[in-house]
Image 1 (spheres, one colour):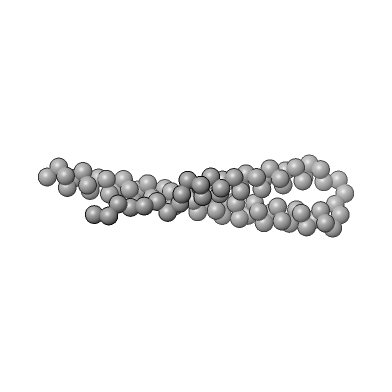
Image 2 (spheres, helix red, strand yellow; image 1 turned 180 degrees about the horizontal axis):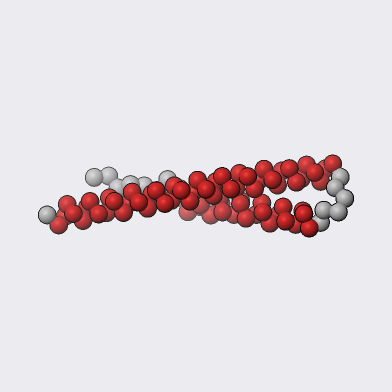
Length: 86
């Protein structure tokens, strides 16, 4: 039986969380400093909002995939233990 491989590496998981939290942090800094917004600053906020959206989507995907992978690996280990016990 072939052993199941996780879909996401640790590096990808860390980068997805980092992207989300970095976007939220940068957006918070921007909101704190937002007294008078010029046009180039509005473009900055749009870019940060896109970064937060991508980070949120990646974080959701990684969390879901990791949970599914844990279930599949646990099921494979359970089957292997049952077959080796016979």
